[in-house]
Image (cartoon, rainbow, N blue to C red; front, side):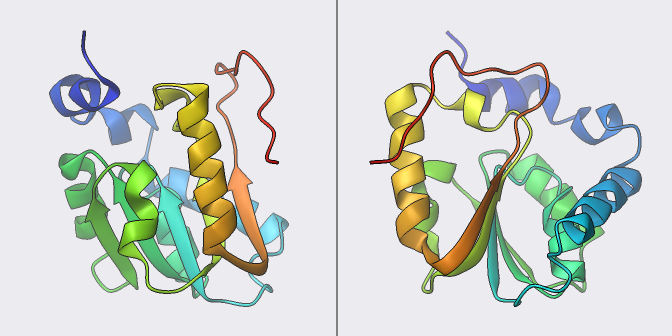
Amino acid sequence: MNTAQDHYNQQLAAVYSWMSGNPEAASERNHALFCQLALDSAPRGLAIDLGAGSGFQSIPLAQLGFSVVAIDLCDALLSELRDRAKHLSIRTIHDDLLNFSQHIQEQAQLIVCMGDTLTHLESLSAVDSLLLDIERSLIENGMLMALLSLWCKIAQPIQLE
């Protein structure tokens, strides 16, 4: 059985950004979304992009003044991110997003996990574990932005206790 990592490494990475239509346009759409959500006037600090891919969220967050840690399992997509964001404050980490807290030394102002990233996790207990790590990794009044693609759904609600 192929894993999500195998799927990205063997098939999807080569066409991931192309599927967006235009990587710069995708970044601009997220920049507009982040401004609409008032992140352009929020305190800046550490932002973590879980499942960063080629940087559709990381780049606009860095442009808004956040120091970004971008974590993804696909090194090819992270390489593309690095190529597109040469001068921005983005540190890329090639690892499972479940391990993100091992790569940060301070709590985050913002954590984003967008697209179909959560649906790539192997179980609801993995999602629960990730959400607990996120809760511990955010500063007081920090924010989690988790958007699921329209075609994705989770079989049952997830609750933090």
